[in-house]
Image (tube, rainbow, N blue to C red):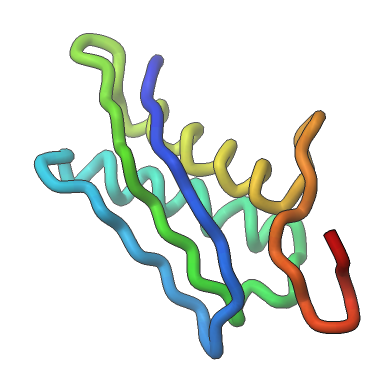
Length: 100
C-alpha cells in the first residue's frame, strides 16, 4: 500500500476539513478524510471542533494505492499534526495554552 498527502492545521471558529485533490478518486479522498477524523476523535482531542484542516498534494501510487493506503496517509498526517508520533510536535497554538 502506498499513498501520500500533505496536511496543515490552524485554529478556526468551527471544524472545517478542506480538500484540494483535483483528479483524485473520490474513494481516496473519503479515505483520507476518514483517517483524519478517526485520529482526532480517538485521541479525545477536545478542540476538534475549532480547527481547519487542509489536505492537499495527494500523490497516489500507480499500482499500490487503495482506500486503506489513503486512510493510513490521513491518519498518519493527523498524528503528525497532533504531535503524537515520534519526532513531531503539536503545531497549533492555542492562546494561553501552548507556546512553540
